[in-house]
Length: 126
Picture 1: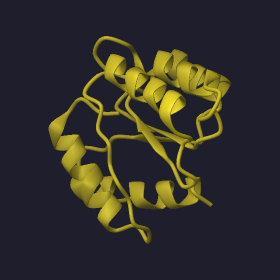
Picture 2 (picture 1 turned 135 degrees about the vertical axis):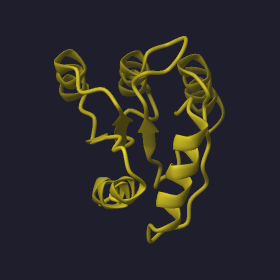
Picture 3 (picture 1 turned 30 degrees about the vertical axis):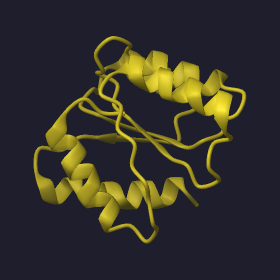
Picture 4 (picture 1 turned 180 degrees about the vertical axis):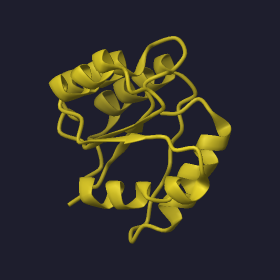
């Protein structure tokens, strides 16, 4: 769930370096992310190898609220969630821990450092 197109592009590049096939769904804001989650709960179970990459600074509904909704989900509560954000706010970090995010990755300034996200993703899926 990411609202920044350059970041979506970088995430796609990172995922291409991972050792698994993937299907990427991008939600442009928190409200769209929550609606997607609600559709999953109505129509199908979360895929076995699902992973959520979640930015905190989303328009409409903040990423922390989206994470709360994920953890309250009847079908998707145990899906690994990797927080992918520029925020290092102590309040955000505390909420991430409280809501049991699987991992936290602070968006780096350079592309080479961004590629390290692949290691975080692979560990989250173990």
